Length: 153
Image 1 (cartoon, rainbow, N blue to C red):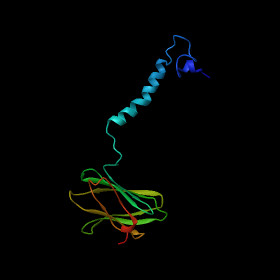
Image 2: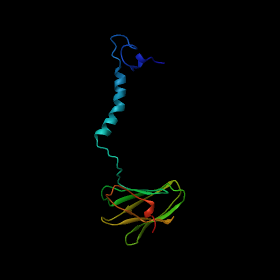
Image 3: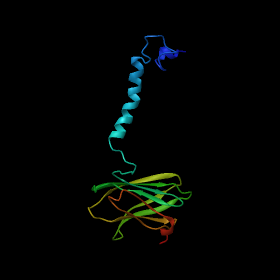
Image 4: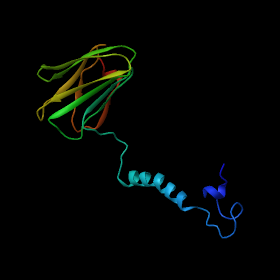
């Protein structure tokens, strides 16, 4: 096993002979490899609010969480995660009632659908089993949730 002096770790003095710098060049490079990504993340303005290019719906027993795209894209994806203990049967529909897709999602799994949409088109995810409130997919709203008191149809 390498000693502290050989690894370049630790302060000069007690463990290092007089005239030693304390850190080897390899240790400094290793530290920079770990610190550089951290500095990039902190300086790039990463925010705590999730934003993506797809709708991400997470169905839980007590709440429905939705993350929406920041801006409109004609080709959108909808990812639905079932974190409930029961199977979800639902559909994606337009405001006029036209069905875009039917979904069956087993407990603790997910399903994804690619959609071609028009700007300003209102799309809803309608869970039918269990019977829950329709979830409007709102572009630009970032992250939002639907609490259980609003789940009734």
